[in-house]
Length: 331
Image (tube, rainbow, N blue to C red; front, side):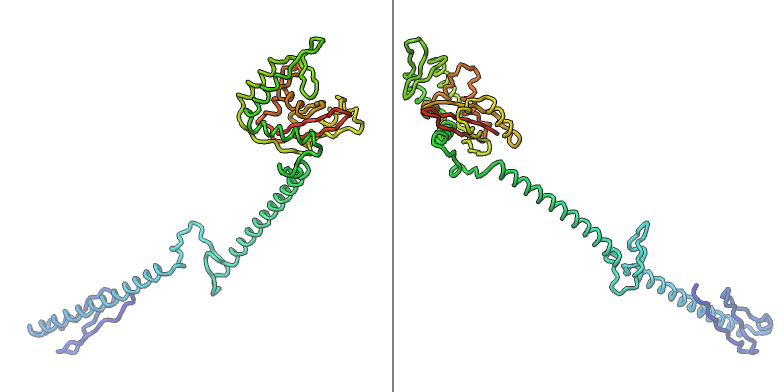
């Protein structure tokens, strides 16, 4: 244990022969003649000296052993307190850096590690910037499309241009908001049903309009309104309006109507559309709700009171004493 020290060698007091000490096995070697020639007192004295030497050697061994143990303990303590020793991280594949002599070196912030992280961050930032640019382009494109398709759809400021279309638009939103309020109007309008000299049913108020079913369909309209709930008002959308033809007589043309609807459908899907020709706005709207046209689908009434529709387009023209009107709906 530790470095070997040379142990004490004491002389024999009587004959000056030396007592030799073996440094390897820590045992003393005495001259046999010394013990043979000495008297009993001298033997006792020699034994005492031998015992002292052994005690001194034992103390020396203990000192060396303690010194070694203290050195081991000091090393262990230093290793435990050192955060950069190999046992601290306990990694299967320890991380090493070439610049570990750098005064600013830090295991988790080495130059190479920082460069790698920065490169990855720059890459992520570039990808994020690209995504933001793409999203911004998409938003602008969508906004552009919305501006093309939905121009100034504020209900207060965006209205049909002609008076007839304005009146129809306002009445449609009134009945959508409060369907039951219109029941009394339909009830009173039943008194306008008459039969002419030829036996045909006529709705005669401000104008004369031929009817197909007469009273039964008016009663059906009242029942329908009783079942209706309030719904959102329609928004006027100029982009779904069917333009009036240059030749006013073409307003009755089915081919013109079909052609224009196909053009509108390329940008905005049209849910429903129809044409109406009448000479009085009030009568026109009442008969839109009654929808006594001989067709059992009641398309006009169902379109006006369809809660799924959001937009309406109305465009009309005066032809002599009559009004020609196009009405379109979209969701």
